[in-house]
Amino acid sequence: MLAVLLLVLPLDQLGDALGRVPIWVWVVSVPGYLTLHLIGISKWRMLVNAAHGGLSMRSAVRCYYLGLFGNTFLPSLVGGDAVRAGLALKLAPGKGGVVFGSLLDRMIDVVGLALVAGVGALVIPGALDPQNRAIFWALATMLGAGMVVGAGLLFFLPARRFPYRIRRIMVKLRRSLDGLRRRPATVLAALVMGVTLQTSLVALNWWLGVRCGIDIAFHAWLFAWPMAKISALVPVTQGGIGVREAALAALLSPFGVPAVLAVAAGLVFQGVIISGGLLGGLLSYLLGRGGPVAGTPVDGGRVPDLVGV
Image 1 (cartoon, rainbow, N blue to C red):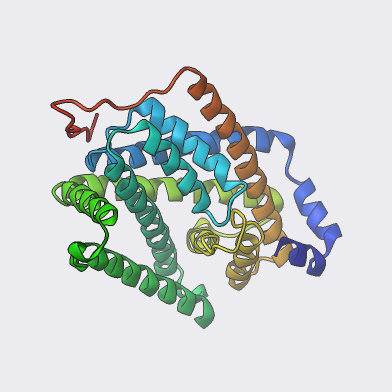
Image 2 (cartoon, one colour):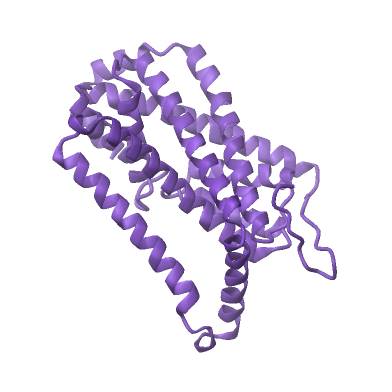
């Protein structure tokens, strides 16, 4: 997908747009990107521990940054989630909490993206063409249907018809979900944190776009960037590279942004993502050298309620 973009776009104009971004912008953006993800770390750990995962803060940082590292090499943006959860399953005593907390964390991230895009769509309804409005409502419908179907399968499938090992997994997931269901304030707080993180990332992309020569209102980015990021969830992509830039170009076109500038801004942010992922992998490795730090079951093996800890 990235190769197709480079074939159809004028490379001289793309190079000019990328050349407008000084090196200090990258130097500032990479640590800023990793710092913003501290919100994501806190949100994920809060959900995992609310589901009785028992994950320490140090382990959460290690797992989360390793997930950012995995996003650089694995299909879709969900590939890093698998890496993050895989390490957390080794470090946390509550396996069901890790699984369900991680699934809910990704769902909340997508809902947060949809909410940010919805705010942008409400602010600028006249600037959206019918195609963009159709894409937005189609994604919102698919998201809602997926959440309903997933919850229905978990609760209403008869567990006794499955093999013993699968029944054990289903029981643990149901128990973790029950723990979260009794704490709606935790889920709401996670959603607020997710929206805050996504809005902050929109602001970072808006700033990078300005450096590339894109002069449009911030609320246009509120709609376009979350929608482009959702497109990067397509499993055939590697970290969303190419697809996200193409989607951003299409979504910013109604606002008069040339495709070459939109792709340039997307590539600059892609450089920030890759650099942040590599640095995150290094941080995760250094934290791991200090020895595994895992939550410890207490009270006869039962993991306590650690929400808010």
